[in-house]
Structure formats: C-alpha cells, structure tokens
Length: 318
Ligand code: UTP
Image 1: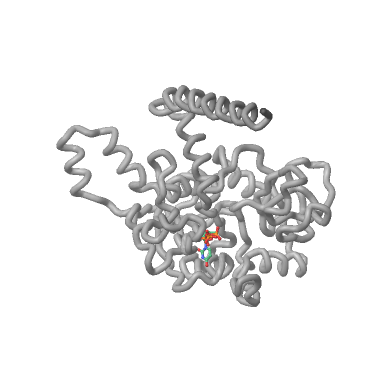
Image 2 (image 1 turned 90 degrees about the vertical axis):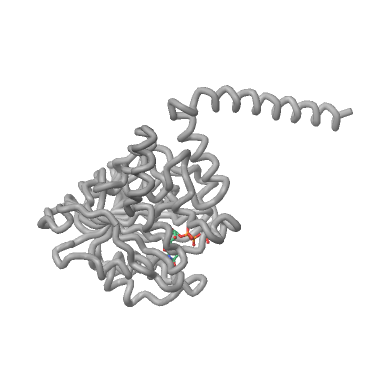
C-alpha cells in the first residue's frame, strides 16, 4: 500500500478525493488466464491495467484508490506494495529504467483494499466502498479497470459538469446506431450542447429500433453520495446481481440530476481478449521502443493475410 499525506486534506467543492475501482469480478471472458491472474494485472505493453487506472485517478486529483477485491485476487494490492529486494537488485545491476518503472506507483495514490466476498454485482461492489470514505466526501468517482478511456481527462470534465449542475455525471460515447444493442443506452433530454446532456433514463442493451439514442455508457462514473442509499434499496436484478444502473435509475426517478459528458477519443475494452489485443497493439504502436518494428511487421503480416484471402477467393471462383 502506498501512502499520500494529502489523503485527508479538506474536501474542496468539486474535488474528488476517492476513486473506486471495482476489481472483484470473475473475469470469465478471459479464462483460463484469469483462473489465477486477475485481469487487472494483465499488461498493456508492460503496464498492468490497474496501474493505468491509478495514474488516471491521480491525474484527476484523487488521493485515495479504493480497490474492491475478491478473496482470491490478492495480487492486485501487491502491485502497490514496495518490493525492496527487487529494487536493490535492479539498482546493483544498474537497471535504472526498470527501477523507475517499478517505482512508478510509489506515492502515486493511497491504494486501499475493500473485500467483496462474493461477486454480487457492480452495484454491490460500489456500495462496499462507502466504508472507506471520509464524512465530508460528497461524491465518489468510479473507474472500471477494464475500460480504457483515452486520452485521460474525461474525469476533469465530469467534475466541472457536477460543479455546474450538481448530482451525478456519467461518461458517454457516441456509437453507430446499429451497434447500440451491445451497450447501456442513455435516454436524454434534447440540448444544444453537443457534449453535455441530461439523462432521463437508461436502457440496457435495447434492440436497434427501440434505442432512445446512440449515446452509450462507459466505465466512468462520478456519483453523488446519495448513490449509497439508492444501492441499499436496490433489489438484485439480472443474474441475481445488484446493478448500479438500477440505482442510478431510482435516483433519476427521485429527481436527482444525472448528466452525461460525451467523450471524444479512443476506448478499449480490456475485459475480453479481442479488445485487450487491440489495446496492446494501439499502445505498442505509439511506443518508441516497440512501435516502429511492430508497424513494419503488422504491414507485412496483413499483406500476407490479404494475399491469402484473394488466393482463396480466386480458388473458390474457379
Ligand atoms: P464485468 O462484468 O465487466 O467483469 O464487470 P467480470 O465480471 O470480471 O468479467 P466477465 O463478464 O466475467 O468476463 C465490470 C467491473 O466490475 C467489477 C469487475 O471486476 C469489473 O472491473 N465487478 C463486477 C466487481 O468488482 N464485482 C462484481 O460483483 C461484479
């Protein structure tokens, strides 16, 4: 665990002190890897997803990272622990670059564990974080570690929107209308602002023709503290899990303002192998060490694949 003296600094209006990272899920889409390795520790190039999230939280000014962990996913917290033997060995061998990478999490943020004994849903996981909040924290941010939203900065915008309208603020992406059925879709009030809209309701994975918009939910939430009361009175929904969207719905019904910030940028779903591979390729292509040779290799490999496709087409035609 790292420590940071500013953890208990007085809460400023519009400042978010705690970021909650729900990481107690089973990761079934990534089995068998996730039988023993938490998906949050899988590296994007060389940095585990949980470290990318910690950096995003720290960049938004948060000083506490409340990681919701499962009893068997102990390695996640270990990533934030000091490793003196490793550091000594790296220093002795003059491996300064690697030493800097190991130390990148030191003092970054105060990582605290909250155990979720059983995976009873994202809403249940978020609800557990209330125990680590200080009394003066009026809102909490939730970042899902398997959702990479790039570039960093959307949380700052969400904090600004909460300052203006109060209530809770969620991050949204605009997708092609034919893709909406894969996502939670926002029903929004019409507005002139292309990037900030008030939410009337949320619809989980609607048919394309029933979708109220093509603005869909991502893994970034800025939730007013009232969310904890709403979660307490939320009954288990789909799959017996407590869904955070049900709690947000009930807040909207009570007249609590909920807005979305539309993010323009890239997004990667690290929770499934297809999205994870894309994230690795995307990050590696931007990397000075790995990018140039990966680019050349990918071009060659794609050309081979295209040649094979056209050979097969010609073969089938004849
Ligand atoms: P997901 O449904 O994407 O993750 O939950 P999962 O359950 O680990 O993955 P699959 O679907 O089985 O492959 C979104 C986030 O919420 C956390 C997960 O760890 C993930 O970061 N979560 C989910 C919890 O912390 N607790 C839960 O009970 C459920």
